[in-house]
Image (cartoon, rainbow, N blue to C red; front, side, top):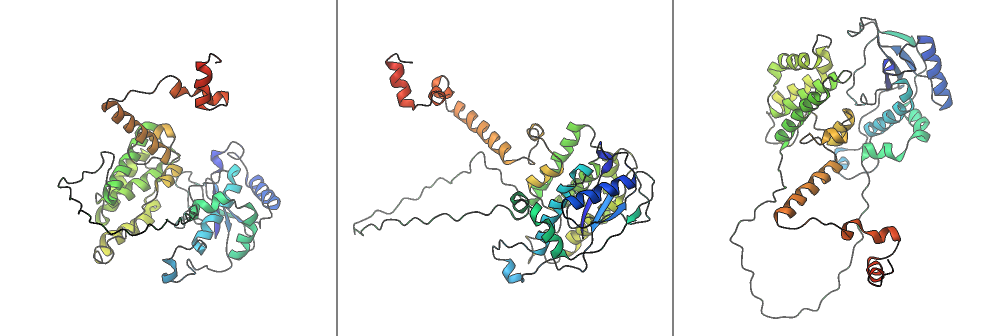
Length: 370
């Protein structure tokens, strides 16, 4: 299915809404955007919208052999991710949780009690199921290139081939190059990180982020989930002691008992596979890790990390922050080498504001025209 997790309690318009108003407004938005009505459910705190498929969909449609190639055509799971992103953007005013878009996301079942509010989850309205292809067709007018690039990545244009001029072969005696006896040293700016050291730096960054923000209410389960995941990658947490260790981390972040270990059930299964199954095939599959290894951009989006906060982190930083740190390092290096900091007109470039070339500017200045 396609789904929206509506955290209405976080919005000004719907934080004290009634079931009737919420249902009417959802239907009105669906009508305006030519969407079929979803099955609507109250979760005990917010609401779920579900567009349930008529039949199950295979995750992949290409063979393993073809999947190794660089195909731009999205697979079923990628089409689903794009559709999830688009449909949740349409319901942003209702408080749609854009962080709950992964395939492994579990929604609360009807009849269960929400531990946060003590209220029972209930089904409000049921509507017709639709085919996966039909829902993709309905969402196509609302899909932007940004949504596609976010899932598939930007398509790199091939560089044009430049034919080199063929030089005539001239036979002459050539001396053999002398090998440099000194071993080449890596750059000072080069920091090699394997998977475990990267994971360690990441959970340290998340702990630092909690320290800076003071309280992370509304994001506590995300912090608990990702800190446990990265600690498992490093080996500091294992399947045998996962529950006990996760409980300690959860209590430290939540500062109360208002959280449920079942939110980490998916991660627990992956830890079991990582500790028990992967070690058996370590020789053949030493590059495969069943735990989550996301990109920095995904973590920045999940935790809404600002540019100012990134300045205090080690690893979870954007490309802009990487470039800023690189400029600072090069600036320090230039000062150590005795280079002076640029100042005056060479730095301010007044000719740009006048709309003339640098040479014309200095010619006019020499003749007293400026």
